[in-house]
Length: 151
Image (cartoon, rainbow, N blue to C red; front, top):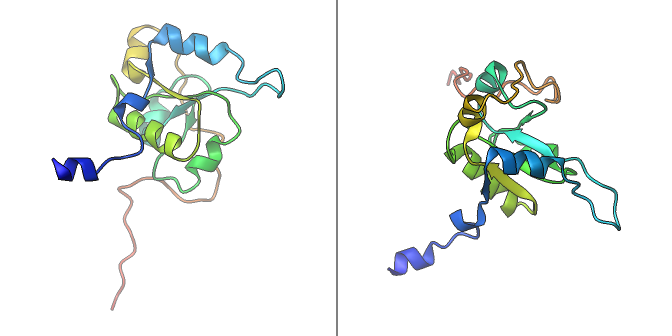
C-alpha cells in the first residue's frame, strides 16, 4: 500500500476526457478564444507512427509523436487539442494527452473511438504525409538501423 501511495503521478486516467465523434466534431468547431483574446485554431493530433498516418488520418490532423523532441513546441499556440489513436481509448493517445497536460496544455481531449471508430462511422479521411513536419530532421522510424561503433 505504501508503494502505491508513493508512486502517485500528477495526471491519471481521471484527468483524461474522452469524447464521442459528435462531441469531438462539435468541440473542434467551437472557438477557443475568450472575449479578451484572439480566437485560436483547434487541432487534431495523431500520435501514431508516420506509416499509419500516411495510410489514413483525420483531415487536417498533425502527426506528432511522443518520440519527437519538438512534439510539444509543434502543438503550442493551438486552442483545443483533440488527440486520437488507432482504436478505443488507445494507449498512445492516452499517453499523449497526459504528456500534454503535464507540459502545461490546458485544453486537451481524446477521441474515444480512435481512428478505427472514425472510419467505421464513415467520416472523412485523408491520406499522405504530414506536410507540417519539419524537413531534414531525419526519420522517426523506430526500426531504422543505428550506426555501430567499431571500437
